[in-house]
Structure formats: structure tokens, C-alpha cells
Picture 1 (cartoon, rainbow, N blue to C red):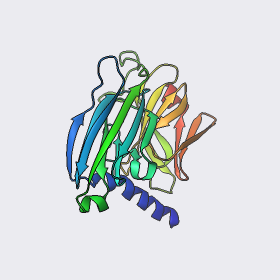
Picture 2: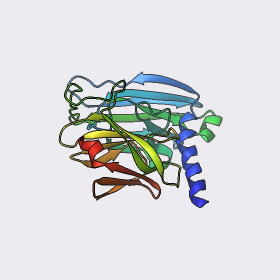
Picture 3: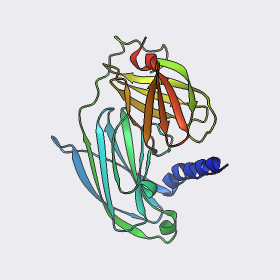
Picture 4: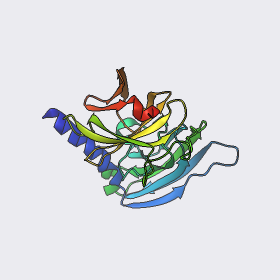
Length: 244
């Protein structure tokens, strides 16, 4: 029962906090030619929020540092096609984010005031420093590594899993959404709940994911068993990552 309640609280943090801002404007993050970082000076008030959007690719590292004048101001990070579910929540994880990205696409850095401050129509000035560095992982062309007909996926498998907000072992559908060389690829897991998980493998080992909880893994036989926190778990077959 305690684990279920904890999971519900965690879900509320993920799903409700990103929606505190009701008036969200969008801005594109652009780097000057030859540079890989930029500093943004901004301001939010009440239920206003800002979505800073930037294009990045799997294998690159994103670093975000945030300095607000109002301590009730935070930022979240949403991965591409996240359905508004944050991969990083500043109110629980702080004002610094650094991680290798798992997939290609547009990432969103959402700045907002917490509900208590928004209700009082408080304001906050802030600086947001964003950098994206490193070389993107090269993907094998689909002409060489055939994709599943009618889909963007290179491979799929039904795997054993205990997905986010569940405590029971079940089956999840796992897909390779991009595959590179030497056991490099991004595995996307899609449980029935719809709260998908993306995991980046390099040289056959998981090195990054779009999860808040820390990742641990073991290798048994032809399976890589990945855990996030105490309950979330996925069993990834080698053949899915390497092909075959």
C-alpha cells in the first residue's frame, strides 16, 4: 500500500506540476554560430510560464543551470513526444540538470512558478544557462538496417517489465527507435499505461534514460535487467539492441 501511495504522489509531481503554468509561451533556443551554449534572462509572473525548445540528438549531453530570484520558481525538462510528462522536475531535483540524451528531437525546458506563488501573482526574474555538447550518435541508415514495415522502428519485442507506477510484473512492448553501430541504440518501452520509457544503449550497455530515478542494471544470460528506483524494471534481450 505504501508503494502505491508513493507512486501516486510521484505521478502527481510528474503530471500536475508541469501544468501549474496556465499561460505558456514558447521560445526557441538558438546557439550562435560556433557555440554550444547560451544564457537566457527571463521573467515569469503568476500563472505565466515559458517553454524553451531546442533540437538535440541522442548521444549529446545537455546541461541546464537555473538561477531564479524567487525560490518558488523551477524548471522541468520534457523529452520529445513526452505527452507533457517531465523527465526532470526541478521542484524535487533542484536547479541543475546534466544528462546524456536518449533520442533525437525537440526538448522542452519549462520555467514556472509553484502554485502557492502563482496564486499570489508573484514575479520571478531568472537566468537560464543551456548547453548541448558532444557528437550525436550516428544511426545506421534504414537502407542498411531495415525497419519494421509501416513503422519507424528497427525492431520490436515483448519483454517482462514492471513499468512506472506499477508493482506487478507484466508484459511491455519494446521498440528500437534508432540503432547505431557497435551495439548502440535507443530502446523505447511502451507499457499499457502509456507512460513510455526511453533508454540509450552504447556498446550494448544502458548509459542514459529519460527517468528521474537513478538507473542500475545487471546482465544475466542474454538479458540486460534495468531498474529505476525500487520497483520500475525492464528486461531487455540482447537481440533487440544488437539485432538478430
